[in-house]
Amino acid sequence: MTFTDCCTKGFEWEGTPTGTEAKLGNNDTYITGNSPDVAVLLVHDLYGWKFPNVRLLADHWAREANATVYVPDFFGGEAVDLSLLEANRWDLIRPFIAKNTREIREPEIFACARALRQAPLNYKKVGAAGYCFGGWACFRLAAKEHDPPLVDCISEDVDGVAGAAVPIQILAPEKDPAFSPEMKLHTFQKLQELGAPFDYHHFPGVEHACFIRGDTNKEGERAAMARGKNAAADWFKQWLQDAREKEVNAQGA
Image 1: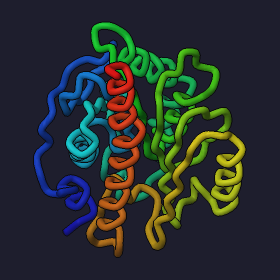
Image 2: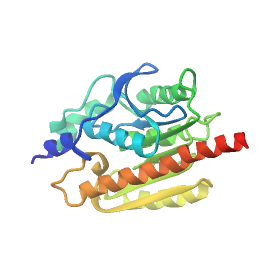
Image 3: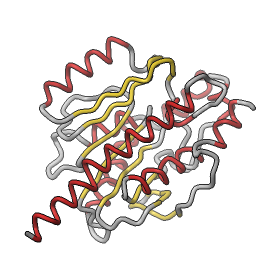
Image 4: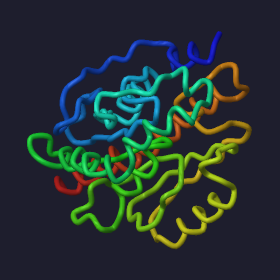
């Protein structure tokens, strides 16, 4: 089985995504789940919003955290050639990355999060998750500068903790050039200073992109993908669905 075959078959892990495509604000979006009160914004990585494993992950979270999960297209309809990712041809991928920097994509990511809070959706609880490209986006969504807050909790796998003000979960592969041991230590120390609950998961023996790729040819990667999925689902259930139920019960008391 090739790397690309592993990527495109994915999760369950081999299955067909069950959601639909529609618009969230101005962005084409994969939507799965039917909760009227709890939403999760999944900011995709370089594999893009149509990558099967991204959508299957969203399906799992929708079922297991009882949420409606949104995966907008933040690459303007374009996609990275998976063969370039397979070959680690970063020299050919960098032009694509340059077209999708934080400065370029941040406004629409914020706009999608706001759309979840506003009419006609009006979600009461909103979480965010991101891998690689989506990691910085999650921490920007959680920053203290937003009043009212854009999200109620986040789960992600890279650095970017400055200013975060909501419950934070980090999924950290052992081998990750984008998240060095020094940066991991800094992150752990910084999280303790923020005063918000946090959850830090270390994944020994696996590398960057394991939570989406799930390559069965890489030892331990499929198990890491499943463990990461479970951790995030539990996190969202606790800080979104369970928190919402407590609010409803308090209002009815």
